[in-house]
Image (cartoon, rainbow, N blue to C red):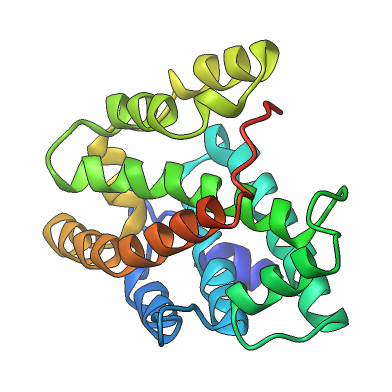
Length: 214
């Protein structure tokens, strides 16, 4: 564990020893849409592969990390209990059983996993288009999670995101070379976008895009 911690720590120049995105993009590519649906186990693997980004970007993002990890764990348990080839099959089966509105349902877990991923996706997409990362984090929150948070959660997030890293700091945490990290970020954004759009459209079509605040 100590060796692992050291391998993920910035070196003297504040740089991470290994690029973040190549393995992540490979995992998300394996979760590509087939026949309009997303393979369930592969998407869980892709989500797990992505979460270490929060350790690199700093504790300001830890609430999102905790939410994302928690929902991945719930979905993995659902898949273990009721195996399904795709996310869509899992959610449809749960809905047919009348369990989609229950606490800790697969439907609710996928919804909040999708929202957390949309936040990070929106942040990285904005940065990849040249927006300063600190501003991008605040705008991404407004665009994604803010509408689903109650007053206290909203204020906590807004205050925390004021300490979001700059683009320079973010890129330094994602690899040895800024230009390479940006190119790899753009690639991941292009891979992730259709998957997140697919999940969003599916949940809306199934009437499972609950607008209640947390």
